[in-house]
Image 1 (cartoon, rainbow, N blue to C red):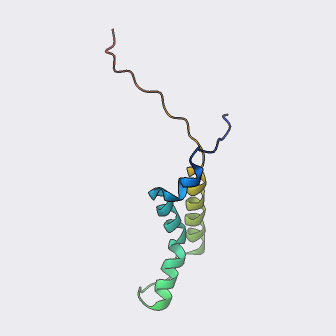
Image 2: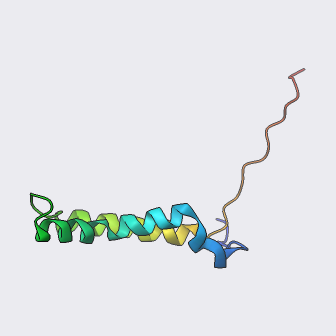
Image 3: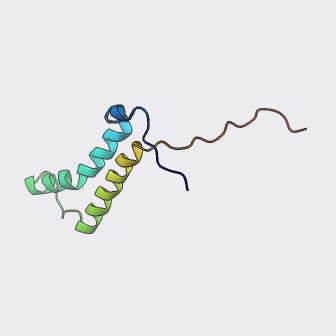
Length: 81
């Protein structure tokens, strides 16, 4: 098993669009509950189990942005002989 290494540009992670999307995803259960409570949306809130699953996946996604991942080797463009 390989050791996790932090990416070299870890201080810029907050600039990536994927980080913003994951942060918005983590806030989604609270935003939805706020919209329902204010009367802008009709319906029940998100079940608590689902909201915790959404939050955990989003936080895991943000954390994984910091981990340097191995890149696959370039495929050869040579024709088979």
